[in-house]
Image: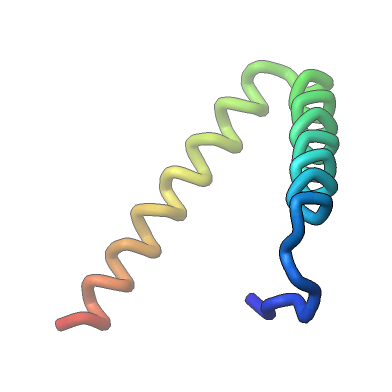
Length: 62
């Protein structure tokens, strides 16, 4: 991830927190429009992907 050239002032942190909160609320709205089954399916797929990444990482470390 590329670091920004701007200094991290209190104002920067406040704006960043507001942006993160807006993004979080938008994700909740999107998830709320999905069926429960779709949310569970997507969650299971993410968990499976996490296990695949972990296995690949362990393979590379050896």
